Length: 354
Ligand SMILES: Nc1ncnc2c1ncn2[C@@H]1O[C@H](COP(=O)(O)OP(=O)(O)OP(=O)(O)O)[C@@H](O)[C@H]1O
Ligand SMILES: [Mg+2]
Image 1 (cartoon, rainbow, N blue to C red):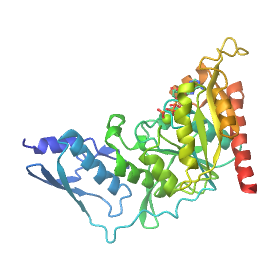
Image 2 (tube, rainbow, N blue to C red; image 1 turned 30 degrees about the horizontal axis):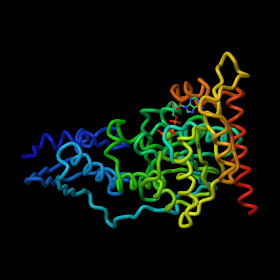
Image 3 (cartoon, rainbow, N blue to C red; image 1 turned 180 degrees about the vertical axis):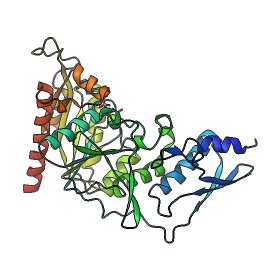
Image 4 (cartoon, rainbow, N blue to C red; image 1 turned 60 degrees about the vertical axis):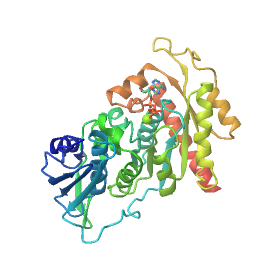
């Protein structure tokens, strides 16, 4: 098979430079394409030697060629200008009093909903809060906060470009969703996902927030590994629905943090969709997914039950409309999230006392 220049540029059009908001072909960054059998070589020209997303873009370009052109393509990328000394990603810049992972082990149980509302609730309590959407494969935080399609700005400071988190509803957020078109997220795998994540952690102006929350993807994959290995996590908040089928996966999620090599304290469990309450019958509770499955799991695992959040239409709708339900001053559901935030703070205080 013969690879053509058009195929190469077509694939590279899927690689977007986050700060410029355009793809690398349109930006004129791709030069000198050479093709020899299954080997494709080209140059990527960056405006700045220390572009903070350089590694991610190079990785994305490689993946795009494998994905769109040929799975066995060999890619050789030269970048210009060459950095004087390749700077490793700097760790000490990330300072947060408490870094908390919101995780589950199970998909679709409401991790992102809980993470977003917990973040806004902590901010309502007066804390400074950052929220990192680490779900490389299905980033949903920007949509839930109404900032989908926003491109974070970058600024130069201390000799390197730094990404400025987007501010909304009183919190600072960053998501891989700001940097890749939704349909392209599938190409962000393995080492590349990890490197993108590290940039969002270490090359961003998080300030020194009281809390940095991390919304993790479902399962226990590369991203989880990076987060638990790289970050001094204060603890993890685990989300589950009451369903029996969810619980086994959730236990795996809990054990990931409890693994002796990882050893991250689990702050407690949130039972989401604990019961259904229709808007017109606010006092009624229908246990669609079984009663108190999460509560029982918490007891079995010897964990605090941090909150029981009902399944209500307003939570789903607010997730779609970009206005988190906890921002609606004093609804019953908002109060449930405020209560969750208080319990998280208490759980951390208990840890600190020992
Ligand atoms: N308590 C709730 N009441 C109503 N809808 C909810 C509730 N919790 C979550 N949802 C809805 O369920 C869907 C899944 O929630 P969410 O995206 O938060 O789950 P997730 O665990 O982050 O999923 P993923 O594993 O894909 O990351 C969303 O549409 C959300 O609005
Ligand atoms: Mg999610």
